[in-house]
Length: 355
Image (tube, rainbow, N blue to C red; front, side):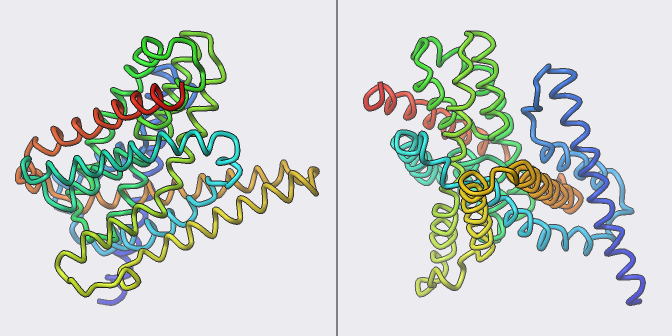
């Protein structure tokens, strides 16, 4: 019995890994070969979830591998989030940090407040509304999968939230460069701040920046938009513990943040510090080793992304379509409003304060 359990556990993990690899290949093919981008703007996470959902809901042979899927969701997900910290460096703040924070903070706060105020009107659960809030206001699917274990979110809520921000993020990627040119003309700083503060996923921000750069011949926009997005991503270490405490303390008024603090975020911060000190050391004292350091960072980034995709494939394999019927279409309305609010607030703040 124990051997059978261990075998099924391993098979569940292997299935998730294979699915993740297929999702990455699909994402690259569609993003580069079909849509023509240098890097795919569609996260492999959405493909991993869809593949898992389709196989799980049209086959009854995968239930015995459930514990392997749960292992991926519980452990590989958190390990991936820890490794994600290597993407962040304090040096990202030095170039555009102060100006970007002026725009980013009102966008995040207004989005979260609007969603909290409207969730009951749209009959959206507390957990799903918070997942949509962080996905819209901070960093898309990454923020969603980082917050989910801290608030005990259901698998269907995670999947729905990721689908939500993927749809509106892709729409923003194609539409916002046109809006940015209409509103800010050729002001590279304003355009970059707008794209970086209002579009959901980092890849989508980069895609929007490239669309703008190619269409309006303003290459600097890509760098400004991407750096703004990295600064925005880093605020995850503050927002996620706060929202986790806010959600869980409703059922326990004596709950302390230390008891539910997502401690894997500490690992995330540690890797961010490693990146910061590594960048400083190799830039200032050991330039000959900079190429190797960059290579190491790249490997850790890829490992983090792969672990998250594996975990999300497992979420798909562990989710049943029938549970989506209870969620309905209203969460998409809420996601649309939240995305619109972020865009409008970003434009207003840039127009009033930056320009």
